[in-house]
Length: 115
Length: 116
Image (cartoon, rainbow over the protein chains, first blue to last red):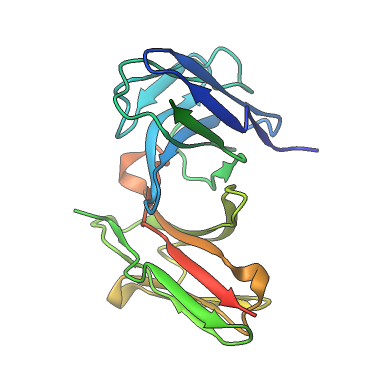
C-alpha cells in the first residue's frame, strides 16, 4: 500500500527535551512538508524539502530542525528552544519537486504533548 | 493579511440538509491553485479537489460540488443531503504560482457537525 506514515501517533515529552517525529512515504514523491496545527486553527508550514539534501524554512521554523537524507524520509526534531510545542503535527508529500505546483497528500499526524 | 478566509467557524445541520462552506481568497497572481481538504476526527487531511485559476467550471463529485468564481475570489463547497460521515473540519487552501515552491496557505477551517 502506498502512503505516508507518521510515528508515533501520540508523543509525550518533558520540558527541555528534544524529540524527533518520523515521516516516511513510499509514493516516490520528490517534495515533503511539515505542518503544525493548533486547536481551531489552520495548518502552518514549519519546513519543506523539494529534493534530497535540501530544505527550506516555512513560516514558523524557529525551534524546529529537519533533515532530508533519503527521498522517502523527512524527520522533524522539536527542540527545547520551541516555546510552545504542544500541537498536532502533520507531514505531507507531493509528487513534483522543484517548486512545481502539485497536490499535497497528508499522513495521519502525530499529537505531541509537553508535560 | 490572511490569504484564505473561511468565515463560518462551526456549522451544524440536520442529516439530509445541504450545507455550503464559503472560501474567499486573496492573491495578485494570475496563476494559482485552490484546494479543499477534509479532516475527520481521526486527524488525517484527505484531499478532495484541486482547481487551477484558468478553469472556472463548477465540479460535482457525488454529493460534493464546488463553485469557483474568480470575479468574487471565492471557491465555495456544497455538501448535498449531508450524512453523519460528513462531520469533519473542512479546509480551503491556496497555492500561488509566483512563489515557485508549492506552499499552501490554509484557511482556519469549517467545523461541520451533522446531527442524525
